[in-house]
Image (cartoon, rainbow, N blue to C red; front, side, top):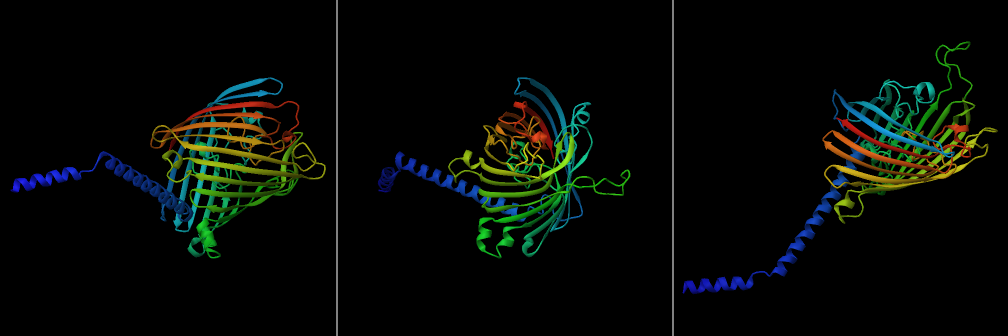
Length: 460
C-alpha cells in the first residue's frame, strides 16, 4: 500500500512539473529583474559618485593629516604633424616629447587643501623653438608647448571651504584652468574647472564657489538639481617693468595696460548623469601683436553652454550606460580700442562655435575610444592658443575639426593611446594672438592640418 501511495505521489509530481515554456518565462523574468537590479545599482553608484564629487572632492585624495601626497605622471609621445597652406605648400615633421608632471597635495585640515603641480614638457634632444618662436614660454601656455626641459609651475593654489556644511569655497593662486571638459576626455583625465571650449589656458587668480548645499538654504530644489555657482577673477598681464628697470623705478608701469578678467560658471542642473553647465567671461585690455610688438588692443566677451550626459538612458545597454556624450555652444565678441585691430578689424566682431562628441567603452577590458567634431565661424575666438594638439586647437578652429582617439590600459598605472586630429580651416588666424595674426582674411595661411599622436603614459 505504501508503494502504491509513493508511486501515486511521484506520478502527481511528474504531472505537476513545470513545462519548458514556463521555465523559459521564469528565466526571462529573472533576467529582467537582474538587469533592473544592475541598472539600479549603476544609478545608485553614479549618484554616490556625484555626491562624493560635490561634497567630498575637497578632501580627496588624502585625508586630513600632516603628510604630503605626491603623484607622478610621465607621458612619452610621438606626433606626426602635417600642414598644408592655401598656396599649396606642405610642411611635415615628427616630434618626440616627454611631459612629466609631479603633483603635491597637502591637507592640514578637513576644510583646507593645497595643490601644487610642476611640469617639464620637452622635445627630445636640442631644438631651436625658443630662438624661432618668442611666444613659446609665455605664462598662458608655458606648460602646454613642448620645448625645453625647464620645470615650471603649472598649478599652485589652495581651497578653503567654510560656512554651513562647508557649502562655500574660496581659492587663490595659479589656477587649474587647462584640460577642462570635454578636452579632458581624450586624455583620460578628470576635468578641470573651466569649460575647455571657451577657456583652455593657464592663469593666476581667485575663485569663489557656492555649492548646491549652500544654495539649499534658499530652496531645496537647488540641492535636488545640483545647482552651483562659481565666480572667477584673474590677471593675464601685469603692467610692470620689474625690479630694476633701466632709467625707471622698481615695478614701474610699462607702456601697456593691465589685463584683467572675470566671469562665472553656473551649473543650473547636474544630477550626476545629465547636466547643463554655463560659462561667461569678460576680459579687459587684451594684449596682441602688431608689427611684432605687444600692444593693448581692446576688450573681449565670451559665453558657453554645455549639455552633457554621463550615461545615456537607464539600463538600455551596458554600452550606453558607460557612454559620455556632449554638445557645446559658444559665442565670442571683441570690442577693439579706438583705431586698433583685434581680429583684423577696428570693428567689434562676433563669432560662434559648436563642439559635439562622445566618449565610449571599447571592445576589450579597460579601454575607451571617442570622437568629436567642431565647427567655428570666421570671427570665432576662444581663449586657447593651440595647446590641445601640436598643429592647432580644435576648440579654436575657424572651419571644421575632426578628432578620434583610443585609450588602452596596459596594466594599472600604465596606459597607451592613439589619436588622429584633422583640421580644415575656412579662415586664417584660428590659433593666433589678437592683432595682425588674428585677421581671418590673410591671403595665405594653413588650410589643412593633421596631427597623429601615439603615447605611452605612466601615472601613479
